[in-house]
Amino acid sequence: MAEVLLFHHAQGLTPGVVEFADELRRAGHSVHTPDLFDGRTFDDIETGMSFVNELGFSEVMARGEQAIAQLPSALV
Image (cartoon, rainbow, N blue to C red):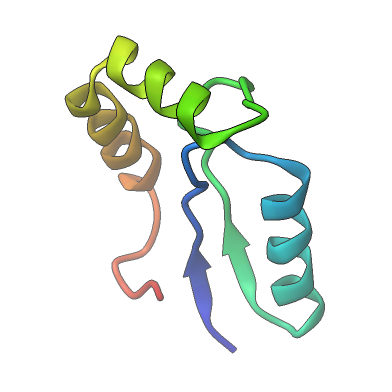
């Protein structure tokens, strides 16, 4: 099975994203779901994107790079 890296969307690591990751896990895949927003989630995309703009897109990218630094290079 595949080793999958699943980044969340602008609303953060929401229950829907976690459920999708769990679905992939139940299918036998290994799934990594880094939380780039430190536990914060948002009710809509606009609010999430405001947080991204406040944080800075380069910071979000750096958090993503840091999250995958210890993962194998063969990811889906």
